[in-house]
Length: 373
Image 1 (spheres, rainbow, N blue to C red):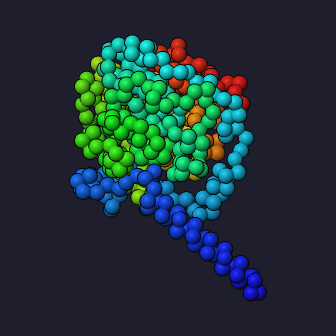
Image 2 (cartoon, rainbow, N blue to C red):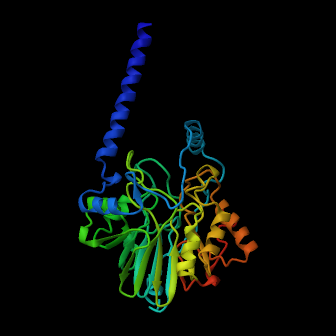
Image 3 (cartoon, rainbow, N blue to C red):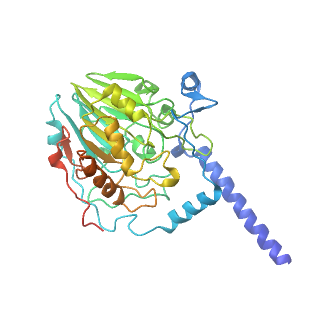
């Protein structure tokens, strides 16, 4: 009995140390980011979308998950499953610097780097959107979802000149500490509060522009408007809903691109269509979904409907093809969306990762995932 008590005390001591280490990590690690203070916090508190000490979604969005269900999901994630990650290396396209430079100011171009990382050129201005070029989309640099194998992963030093870094929210698969450190000399545009992370990482406050929902910013010939999305925010243990999240409408020279970012299906899509439609290209999430969290991540069939709602001429799916963040196979999102888009007669753009597509040219589509394990 005495030996049992000693072993038990030893185990309890280890658990206590691990808990202390975890709290210390979240309190001290720069990877977690910062919390809004001062004038930034005052502006947040003055927002009509900030109530009861947190930002609120446009429609009620229940995110409660019973402990038993959460434990089951965690177990299933850790156990892994067939085809959640590709066994083959995904064939990507190297950045063509000359082709990017040659895009006319009257046109727009997009290059997708997997998940929701995008390069968009409009009105002669180059936007880098939600760049995550690190190895993991995770709280930790040594554990968590690891990127799939590509023939070539994009890096900051491989990019053409970046004019603006455009961010949608502060989750790890959209705001990467490692990548931000390499971009801290750029101009940033983000939802309210996200600048707190950027400042902690060395970006000057003068280089950060923050917006609330339906607010705009003009950058030369390009107009950006932050629209609501149905999601949430937070990088720490206690700061959920402390910074804003959203989607972006980009307008230049009569062309319109909509980056939907992360969102459950929402009435906002129809509102975007009514305010800004038709949209020349809608970049909408299609991946990391599950019936258990459908309020914050659309199912593929809902992605197709959202494209119709925003009056998109062409739909290009993102938020897939780089990280395993749910329980479905890595190709299920694009397979289900392709079937629904065909049923609805919705033009679907599916270029290779890294390929430059000008003016949503559908001839650049490829079923590049077919045949890959």
